[in-house]
Image (cartoon, rainbow, N blue to C red; front, side, top):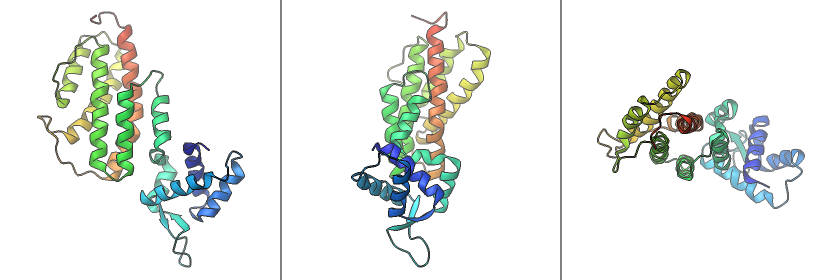
Length: 242
């Protein structure tokens, strides 16, 4: 069974029964998924273990059953299940959604950096996660520059990209309704870079919590959609440098 599909079924089971047992989760999945096979139980246990490590689940069901294989959804896990942010705990699904949020092909470099950012996040390495996401942002901004017909300066410091992109777009005849969302998107993307780089573009130590980095990861697919819509528009805009 596809691991991403299985993980989503685990999420559904936990929404129904936040205080449960690993075997009860499996029984719930067997009732709704005909493709669930006997050997999938190992993948199921691995997913449950991942959720335990990530703090979505904790051992125990109640005061009488405090140990594994009884489990319960933590307070943070319940919030993520309720508001949909649990999607960030599905690495395969996150990458698929990143690709599906736009009508245009996302570059392999942006996809790779975003995936590594999510894996760092799931390992509890929040500063490393945002640093990897910043690398994806840099690659994305470079794609915008190329689409605008502007040669990417070499070397170009990460913190200089926002200004170079702004200058390139200033000479383009873009629709008025495009300008505001693009400006907000570019400012948000630049904020990611500035969090992990000082004004001289040197790496800086940043104290980051899980929710801050989670918010950035969840916003990134929508930001990619705006950026790639802009790139497609730039390729069709008269006056673009050859």
